[in-house]
Image (tube, rainbow over all chains, first blue to last red; front, side, top):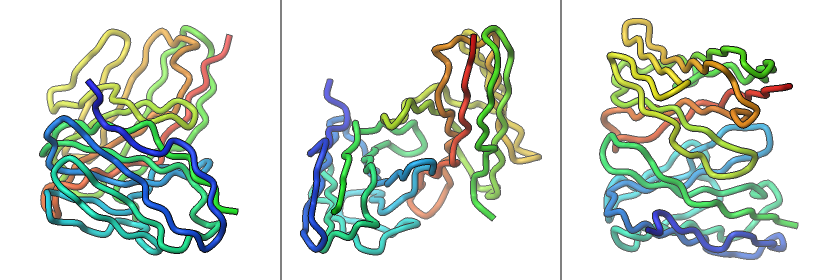
Length: 111
Length: 111
């Protein structure tokens, strides 16, 4: 049972490069989320998608775009990476008011 | 005011001690409540859901006080392996039923 799968697990980018973080869940969940976590800080919501075809901004959306490709997949794109986007990124999913499940995270460094 | 607030700690306790964490929330429309555990830079994992009547799982007891808008987590007979960050999570009704995290409380259990 895969749960929530994120790729890649690690990435180093140069300033100005672009990349897409992939997330897929196999639990038939409606809602999916992207968070970032910086050292000593909590999880901050970047974007979320309450259902296929809808996306909404979270607390820190600047510099990111998302795409809910279908019910299973929710991708996060950095169009022009900046050092301030160095962080650990977590994808999560849930259904309704139930518990959320997380991917293992993507450790991104922008140099 | 943040939607979910926690004392960041750290709480340093000896093995065998009882420790309690509180989490306050500002939105009375909060619908679901959870405690998650996060080990260093890994993905958060569900510790337990929190129900209105209170609930217990082994050494862990969770309580919800809707009138005062807080939830609590009590850990009895602390083990070294309990050392982690404990995250309070709520789901608000409306706005896509968004997951909202507290910043987490760090627990260190010592010999």
